[in-house]
Image (cartoon, rainbow, N blue to C red):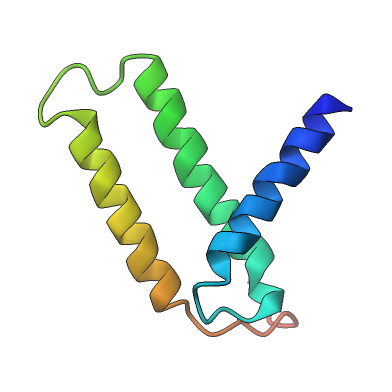
Length: 86
């Protein structure tokens, strides 16, 4: 149950952040998944030392990642037609 509570809290925080962007409600799930993937991926890579082999410091890369996410969320692409085959 604690994991579920934590997940709901993270989603609520993500939704609060997304209110600052002009994303349609139906796109929020995609944006939340993207943001979560970037955050979790960065944390996991850093925790196993994947950034130790070269400069600059991971904090600089993290700042760039946040800038990139902000830019993407500001220019979120129009929703794809859900009936279109991929």
